Amino acid sequence: MNAIDTRIADTATVDRITWIRIASTFLPLANPISDAKVLTGRQKPMTEIAILFVEIETTDGHRGLGFSYSKRAGGPGQFAHAKEIAPTLIGEDPSDIAKLWNKLAWAGASVGRSGMAVQAIGAFDVALWDLKAKRANLSLAKLLGSQRDSVRCYNTSGGFLHTPLDQLPTNTDASREKGIGGIKLKVGQPDCALDIHRVETVRKHLGDAFPLMVDANQQWDRPTAQRMCRTFEQFNLVWIEEPLDCYDAEGHAALAAQFDTPIATGEMLTSVAEHWEFIKLRGADYLMPDAPRVGGITPFLKIAGLAEHAGLMLGPHFAMELHVHLAACYPTEPWVEHFEWLEPLFNERLETHGGRMIVPTRPGLGLTLSERVAGWTAQEVEIGNRA
Image (cartoon, rainbow, N blue to C red; front, side, top):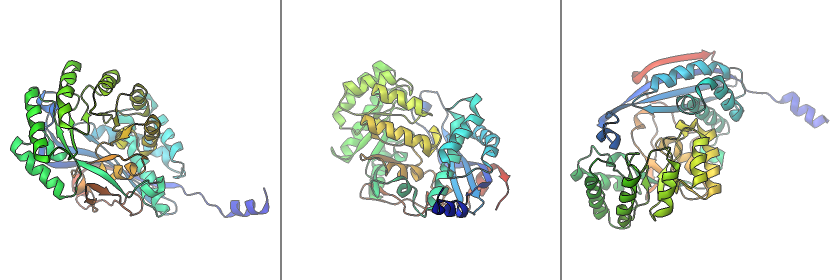
């Protein structure tokens, strides 16, 4: 080691994780939410979202905020798993994010590397990336290497199946007035004629060119999906989402090969390996990974790299507060899903103009927790000691 290297080694310091806070928060929804899974009897209407928050602090006083979530069930399980594995991070260098992801995964390896286990890991991973970007005084998008300062966005929350048909035009107009650039409708009802009528009504209201998507939430079998995809060709849709069971890669691939309307899926997959199966089989034109569900930003970036190599388009699912940063880094123009449901959790708001969502320039995710979060928090635990 030469003299310069010696001086650098003598002055370099390694930051260490000293304190972690984990909280299980239940965000109430203003109205019960129903999609096709409710109308087919598989699920009950959704009344709340379970949020897993993780805050991490280091020796040097740097802090990161991360979150994961679950719908209808799983919140207490995510919290319990996070509480078990969190102590493995104490004393570690927060910059070693890939190493720490693997360490957390192996700490809970007996319950697998997908599903609830990695969804718990996702909150830690997001917090570590948020911390790293804040320390660099960069937005997460800039830290990762952004391609653009805004991303196309579409609204889903106004098109759920509990929404009366005559309310849909009003909802679509409200979205367009907010500067949102696309509309997605839920389909997949037991009576396919009702789906067709809803799509036909909204398409006529929007005009032929305005971006319109539909989402069947896995409720069709293969013959029904064939018929509905053929029928929907006339409506010039951006995509048809989850026409089949989320693990039916071959079935999705057959639809993608047969029809001009792109096929979109991926939101229910919870690992890189599951996404890789769809990528290999060309089971999606639009891949829709969900960073909290796959275990955070670290595995999301692996999925995005594989999707880019395969020439697929990208449309991350839900959690726009996080995905706007990740979508901004994808080489080809992606879509981000606009859901205002999580807004009460944070003090900041995302901006939409001209059909696009503006990528925040604040350091990290650019998010701070609102005062209301404390009142919705059911469990919390602190591990380690604050600096």
